[in-house]
Length: 224
Image 1: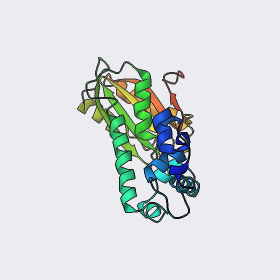
Image 2: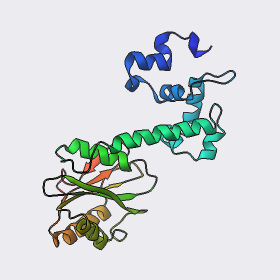
Image 3: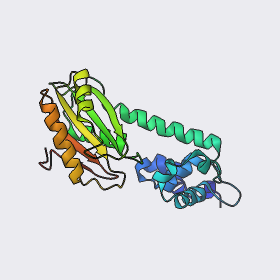
Image 4: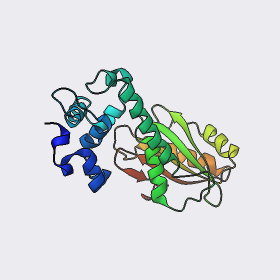
């Protein structure tokens, strides 16, 4: 049966308008994006099959173009729309924190850094550089790859802090495994960076480890 023949409160688009996007499942949101079905399948059927084929929404959104092109109900045009939607979301989240803004909300900082880093398939180490009034000077992703105490170069972090005339920094890096529990290597790396930055009077305010659904703060756990 076509979706147009379903009760209004069961149709994904109408359901969104009635109850809000947060009340829709991944499949229902994806069905709105797909918009039209194919012979014998509704857009919602296609959405469910896609989520099964890619083992979830995240892996679907991170899929290679050729993997998405060949899926029923999709193609290059839908892939382009999907990438545009993702980029709009990223830019919206980027605007959560502006250069010159005073950071006085730890939840905002955590959300910003989480959205920046949690979807990378590899580890990324980033810094928020702040002035004495906790105003944002710059956000930079400094190192990519497998992060440990030997792959982060304190002199490079010091160089960037001096370049931005920063008084404080907040570190963040992601764990692609999804588990944000800091490792011994994370602790050693943080200690080395803290010692190096202390020589130029730059304070390490926090180090956030980003998982899939949780973020752990070194400061909150007494690790800094």
